[in-house]
Image 1 (cartoon, rainbow, N blue to C red):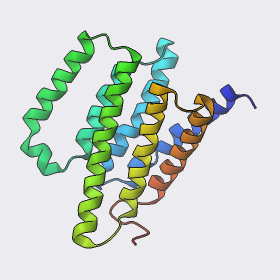
Image 2: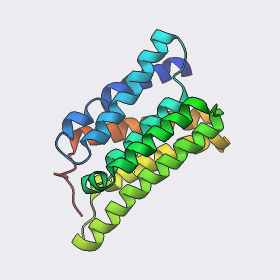
Image 3: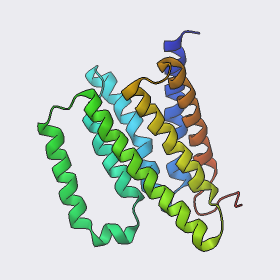
Image 4: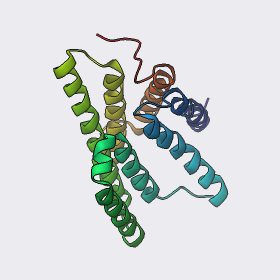
Length: 192
């Protein structure tokens, strides 16, 4: 089987798998996060086949901004709603008028991934400090973000064989998608 065929099959499997977590996480604090995450690949897939070119990086930058906002506590969002709207509109303005190179866009994406990782890591540490429990769901989410960060970092620097690394991280992301399709955030199956 050729790499192109294998990567297409992996893409289709990934899209289907990642459509399930929003339903599984419905009415949890991660529902909006998984809903946005589930919509990113189908939107870019449809765009690619209708417009016949790759969706611009700016779409991913804005989608990652929305993902970051979705991970924040609802009280934080309510308290700073105006700030988030102004920041979002400013980001849209910058995206429209700036011609970012692919590397600059990757740096933005990496920054958003690090901020999301920090948000989940903080939640994980606070949960452990106050409840003396390891929340496996958040731990798996941390590993998911680390996979995404290393994937973007490899695109930026090329520290590993691109094809092999792409396949390994894509398979890992499908496995993460399966986990989030089975385990709910508010009812983790495993608590250490």
